[in-house]
Image (cartoon, rainbow, N blue to C red):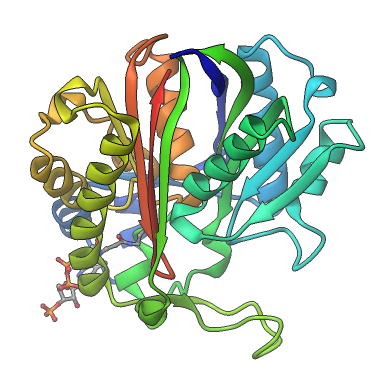
Length: 320
Ligand code: UT7
């Protein structure tokens, strides 16, 4: 049925200049390439230099997404940026991105849902488009998690990386676009994955803390459930899916989740080996990789999913 939907008109991404291999990390941290590869699938991560921030990476990803969509920044009437590592406590990094893009006046705000942030941001932006509150939106996931890692904690510091991904959403009548999104949260699990500082508690930025094994267990269950739920809401079957673009936290979580859905591994976009876990940036970064290398094309049915601190989790079904 033809109706107003938010269509992904372009994708873009940006990575910090510096890439760090497991071997390089093992010279500074008590770990090994073998442990990281076997437990997570990660081989490399990009780490931001001082001049590279969440907002500058986001702006670079946006410029590429706008170019891919054949649009000017001036066409944009909404910017939603998902991040847990904003440049400043306030203003929202989305407003900084707006300024870096040389535009002014349109709505711009941040969404904080950690690793599921992009799914939350996409859901908010597509709802606003369907409600005629916006016509052309930039939806971004951008993070500099390297700034909140405890480099003495080998259980977490080897897992994360920095980067940004963005999509341009455009209102269109038709059958393409975001077909369904579903979002969830369970605040009682807050202490499983959190940052031990903040403006209203310690007055400091804090460092990331995680009970990895617990997060792993919840992730597989929650992600499989929310994918089922979102596919049903979109009225499509798992076997109709062309590509799954999952949150890139751990190759073992991704494998276990898609197995639960009965989907073959060939339909999964995997970038955790080269980006590590970039939190809110991971889904749009992986999406951009698969669009640019020609795997994902117009008309493909794709499923995006993520789970992270909060806990928060969500999924989206999109006719690309
Ligand atoms: O974005 C969403 C949030 N994050 C996630 O989704 C991450 C979810 N969790 C995971 O991916 C996995 O739980 C981890 C990769 C974090 C850990 O894998 P695991 O198989 O659950 O390992 P573990 O935490 O049970 O640790 C096993 C062993 C421990 O040694 P002992 O106690 O068995 O002797 C750790 O001390 O591995 C040790 N270890 C390490 N060894 C070398 C932990 N970190 C490292 C390390 N290098 N970096």
